[in-house]
Image (cartoon, rainbow, N blue to C red; front, side, top):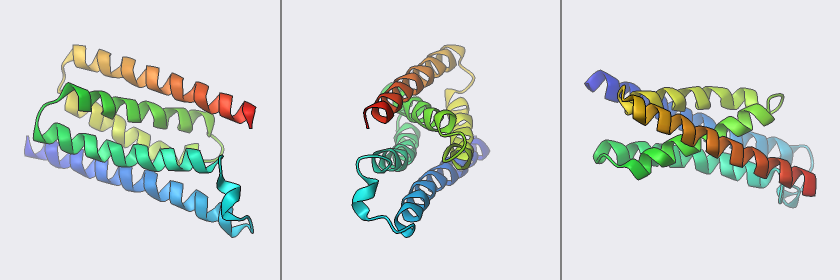
Length: 146
């Protein structure tokens, strides 16, 4: 049990650090190309902020789940992973590749915390899929509008 808990924490900390780091690096790169801070708004700044917040919320969700079993925080955990999946797929040639390790780390954490319960896994993957689909639609609408 301790090994599993240690593995969960190692994966979630590494995945969260990677997500925040990638969002920060992409924002920094945008600003270093001579663009002003306002060039990040609304896009891609909104996306980068969302990636960083999703990574931090995943860390918070695991902390809450470890303290006391809570279905709501497990839903948050799977949802944040779905949001990252949308960025990994739709940003495959830009931000998707560097975000893929975070997605995979969080997916392993999701599966480990489900504890082999098939109903939890099915519900979790349904939540991940729904969150990813909703996020992908939002991304596509925002790109089309702006």
